[in-house]
Image (cartoon, rainbow, N blue to C red):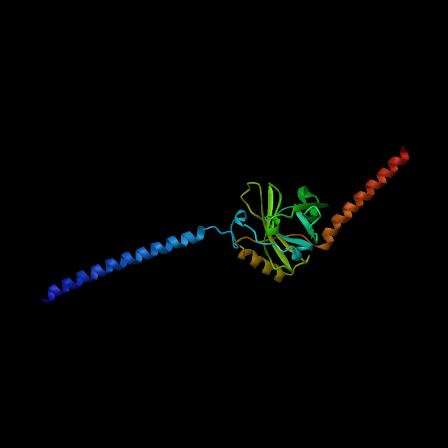
Length: 229
């Protein structure tokens, strides 16, 4: 075989090898892309997650949740400030768990103290950290260290926006503690910032003083009314 023929054969061989390599690379890239896309959209029922409705809960140990908590963070923003929650230390004789809420209602430019209580049946749902107030509102315990903090996710009706609440044992948090909680929030799959809730004693107590003053004024008005009868 002369040199020209050999050169032609070599060129053909190189072209064939290049074609095979291109097809292999393209196929591998395509498979990798498909795998990445599948990973991105695949739902999960355990933290981190992107949909509270998918979370199925996990076995709840009631003892670490007993006592006083402060709602120091939330997402998205709502009008309940200065919130504190008391969790009863035992299941009632009616087989229910009781939660007492105290907060300040700041809606419509108000700053009024309020109280309410909620009871939840101690059933398979609450025993897995799922609290359904009614068919419209559900909250689920998704993460806690059993000592200092607890994260809840929730939803209302068919609203697609998940809600989050952060409970802490301390009323006031340092910037380092806030940052640590924000990191844990992101680890749950949330890419937004926690909205920190007003918990200053001065502002929170001002609502209590206002409520107390209103009660005194009402009592005086009733006393004057009775005297004038």
